[in-house]
Length: 142
Image (cartoon, rainbow, N blue to C red; front, side):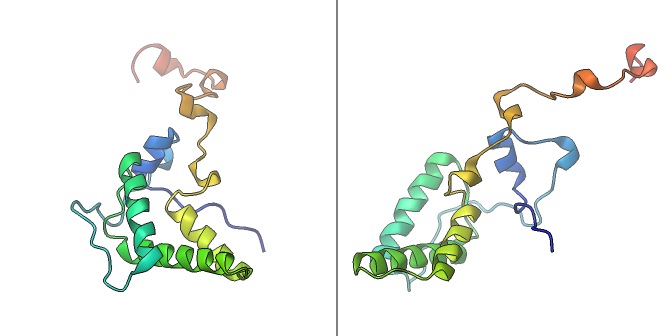
């Protein structure tokens, strides 16, 4: 079975990364939500501290995570549990590490999830020069 590609990105994240292409544009199924995020009451200790640290990073990035509080809380709780295991000298299971990596990628917290294409530098369509010109477009009718 072939490996699936990366998960789709929001239109805003594609624009920020410089990889937005009209032919690949995907519309949001859920509109972004404005407002303050409310930390779940069950999130305590190190996980709550991680929550506030991550929100500050996302705010500086301009990355909205409102409406994703449950996933962010799980991400923070899992990261706190992993840190506790490492501090006690225990090696966490690879299942837990992979779950953390998946959540980190969902929130663009890994180096590989933050990488854009070479067109991000404003080079435009690198293949446009290779395309044959339409006689209608050359005449200015397109």
